[in-house]
Length: 364
Image (tube, rainbow, N blue to C red; front, side, top):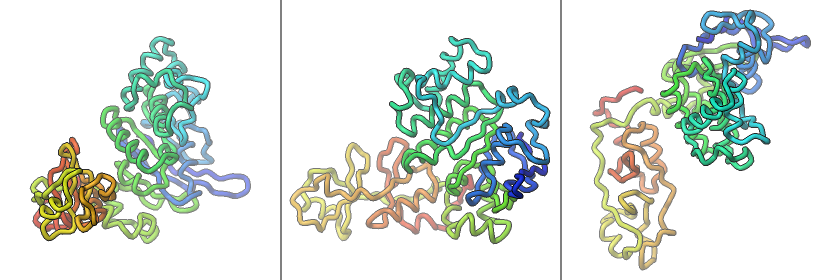
């Protein structure tokens, strides 16, 4: 557990970065810090490993005050992941990961072996071990940064906007991979983010900061959405709180999906129209996997791949109602595509499926 007890940080010019902060990050859980720019999130994070020294108050690691700890030993207990990974450009991926294990006293052989194990754990191929950071994508570099932080097997991890420098698609992949990793390692993690959706997705609890470094509320994502403490928290979380709540409702196991007629690329448009019936749109699949919707009113002879509407998202059957609603809303015909774990087409759903009162919803 990481505990803040009445922590403040102020500077000689009178600036108050953090003001009497008190809360605890539970053992084995992810605590997300969110708030407007300049509210003290990163300052609070850096006071844990004493990159910044608190002006008053105490920070405890499993009940031990950090102020009395040897600085080197303190930092060896804590993995630290920053934006843009901060890898050493002159070292290979394997040697970048091995650094923290070496600093903790491991032999070079043991550290390099550990690096290869962690490379696979964070979802990277062993073939990348001898590459240099400049040969990796941004998302791959962030994975290496996480692996490096884990190489010393720290009790705690601090993460400062680790996924903010990558594009939205890669960011979502990294978030999913990170949740998978946390299920395996169960570290005590505090992460700073400016993205409220990321906080709700990753956090077991979320701490919302006010301007001036004051804590507005700390609670589970579901409680924050259902019971914001005051107008500031409600406004910061956003007026689409109802939409975000759907992220915590699983798609019901008893959902009745529509068996949609499907076509494959290359068939005649006349045949596609016949299958579509009264609908303007028909679903195109290939090898049982959906590609997108085709508008049968097009003046074409055959259904060509380049004419398929690719704007739809696909909701996994074991996903959330938010994913299902996104699939419905992104569809040109408001019929959301649902797939299995192998991305094979199962059926379609409408907005009525999302909000049907007949389902027994399971809050996750």
